[in-house]
Length: 114
Image (cartoon, rainbow, N blue to C red; front, top):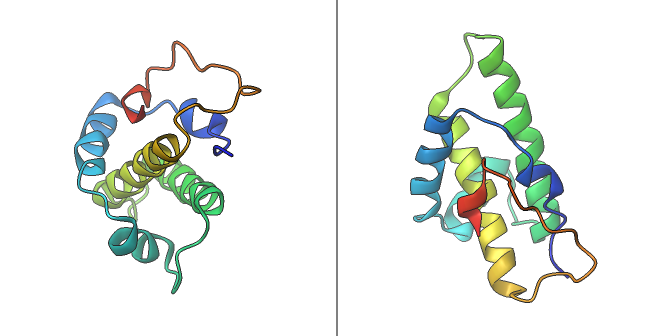
């Protein structure tokens, strides 16, 4: 069953962040990157991983918008690239998709994830 990608596909972020994340997503290795990003010892299931990545990315974006001193553009790109890569991995595992899931046409932010 495909991941519920509604939250990920409706993200609106600056185009520079998205472009950088798309490039980084090409080099994403779930085994190498996911545990470090989530500060976990074992990789969670894909749906759980995406939820946690989205929560971390949302917090990072909030820091960016408030211009907080702890904001890290590098970490933000890493999180966005992991979100994109996790969606790509899920779509590769479920090429037919979920027939009950509504199409996300017109989504600009993460269109490259497909």
